[in-house]
Length: 154
Image (cartoon, rainbow, N blue to C red; front, side, top):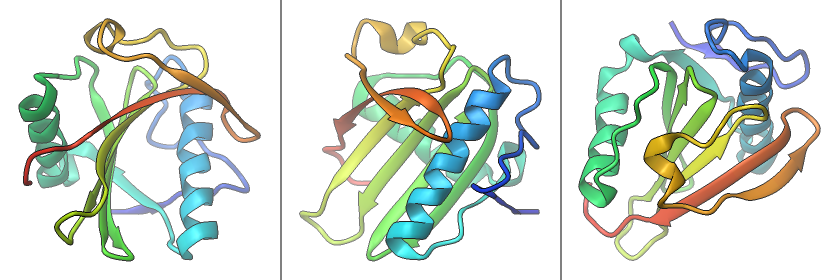
C-alpha cells in the first residue's frame, strides 16, 4: 500500500530500522517537497517487497552500468513518471537513497543519483568510485550526493 510522504510533518514510518532514520526521513521528505514544488507530483513510497520490479530495475542498471551491488537492505521504493521522465527511488536501511532518472525519449537525460543521509558513512561499494558533494537541506541537514550518466538502454 503506497504511503504519501509528508514533507511538512516528517515521519520515520517505514524507516525505523535505519540507524539514521530521522535523517533518512528528512532526505525522503526533501525529495517529496522537490517533486511537489517542481512537478506538482505527490511523492509516495511502498515497502521494497511490494514493488520488486522497481527494485530489480534499479539493481539491473547499477549492475550493468557500473558493476555495483548495494549491500544495505532496501526499505522503500517508488517509481513514477513526470514530464516524460521515468523516476525510481530506493531508500536503504543504511541511509542511502538511490534514484534513477530515465528520459523516455531517446537522447534525453539519463542518470543514477546517490544521496547519503547525514550521519552515515559512504558505503564501501561507492567509496572508491565516487566523490560526494555536499548540499544543505532544511529537512535533511547536510546531504552528500553524487551521480553517473546512464549509457545503456533500460
